[in-house]
Length: 126
Image (cartoon, rainbow, N blue to C red):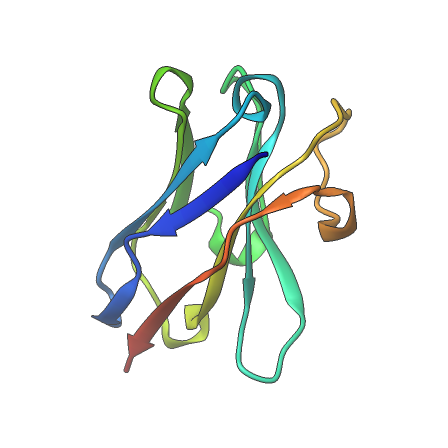
């Protein structure tokens, strides 16, 4: 059974930083693409970033480019989302997700991700 668990969320002032971590169990991690999605209050689930299993390819939604950075440590079964220069509009529940199929290009479609964490709250005050 594959499980994903997020940590590192919280409340931060605008302009601050947070690093989200996702701990993965099971074989998926080293073979598949890992992504981060978010859902703001009253909003839809939104793609944030994803990274190829070897770490050489990544993709970001335009609103976070230059501020967020996704990385992974296959030896530790971890994926990270470093979030800098946070804005109030980044406030959301953030989800770690795993894609069970190798795709090219990397997928931004939440429906194509098989495994999901429980989500973690990130709140940015103005």
